[in-house]
Amino acid sequence: MPTRMIALCLGTALAACLLLFGCSSGRPDAEKHVYRMGEPVAVGPLIYTVTDTEWQAQLGEGPTARLPEHRFLLVRLTVTHSGASNSAIPPAALLDARGQTHLELTDGQGVPEWMGYLRTISPAQTERSRLVFDVPPNAYRLRVTNDAEPGTEKAALIELPLELAAPPPAER
Image (cartoon, rainbow, N blue to C red; front, side, top):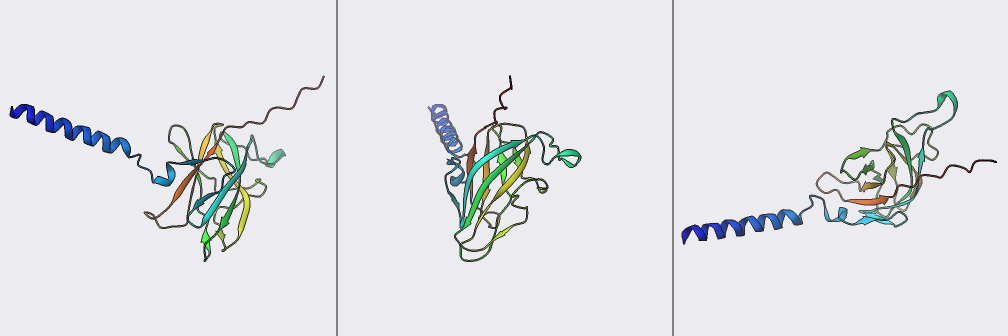
């Protein structure tokens, strides 16, 4: 009888552990919900809205054109600050289907309306600009955060579907 009791206790403990770990994704609650492009996303006092994406094979023209390792993804967005004091707009990142993180480029040379990399926003101000990434063409999730200390940071994910522009029709 004691062997059965030990087996039952171990089985119950194992089931409880599996249930506990199965319910935990390792991400904050705000990152469990994924927002769509066009939806305003409040992350602390910062409200992000992704309006469109654009893939580019190069930035600029001629001999000064910048070539990517993969392709340039330009993300057009607005950021509105609803807080009471100046805030930084933290760098964003892309998450792919495999869970890999791709960081925003720090050099936006050749990107029209580039947001910059070190950026601040005043209360009640709205910034309209673009972020730039060098990634393989794919669907991604944009991870945006508020300006907070590690451990108190809030984040959200915005779905960026793969939308490649169709080539122009051939002339006859």
